Length: 374
Image (spheres, rainbow, N blue to C red):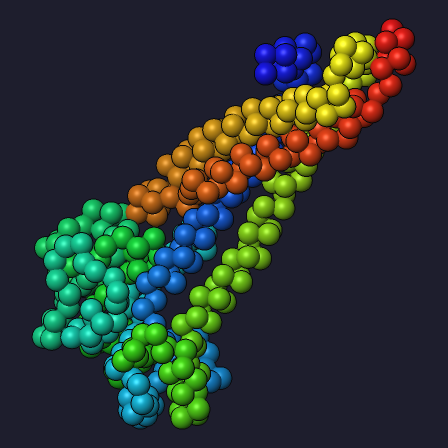
């Protein structure tokens, strides 16, 4: 290892520029990957917290389709249905043309079904809505943080004050940005008596959610029930496309860094041809020379990877601090252990892969010809 370090430091400026190329690539990979990880965690948490609940929409219905009471009764009669929860929704504030993060939403549900509607999410403080509540609300963790609210405080929606009676635990998903209010109160403030914008079906057996969704689609012709697994898969598929777009530019930067490693190692072989000849003349095997050059390239990649991850983590913290005020104290860049491991592993493999050809070239040198090299 001492000799490998000595060889790396022979041409300090060239080595620095090579490492710098990898640093830039891994830095971009880390920052873009941190944004992707934020949404990856959201999808994973959503799958864990779905609880088997089924989202139901009207066939051919558009934005905010309105269900009839008759449709709800038909849903309730389907075998395996534990509860049918009607809801109305609206944004907490005005929707701006540029909106970062998840919208803050107000959901109106029957107060006695508020806990069931949000299962398996628990409360961090306070209580759920109860029958007879009017201007009371249960809020998500991000809403509480952003607006500085605690149980007993008031939150204004539609120019009306709502008393906070409960705060949900943090989930890293959309419920963090949610305000739960009694459905009749929401209808009254929206001036939409009897409105039902969304319907959630809770199965008796959460493990049979997909089968129940299929049964609903067969027995209630005017609706489309989305199986819990399909909802998660659709979100994951959309995220896959997002990840590909976000990471492609970063990968190009990393590959450019790999080309710099190849160039540096090829130049190193040319400069140390005579040295290689001496080593082979005193008994060094081709495998010894091969291993030396691959380890040298791998070390360059690893150093660049560590520096790139460190700078990427720092940038993620800066970006999170910048947007935290708009997102209730939370960030949208998440540097997870798996991202750090993936970035370092990629940098290491990149260095080793980029050093493979120069190492093979060095190992194949004829010792007699190498000793004649000036």
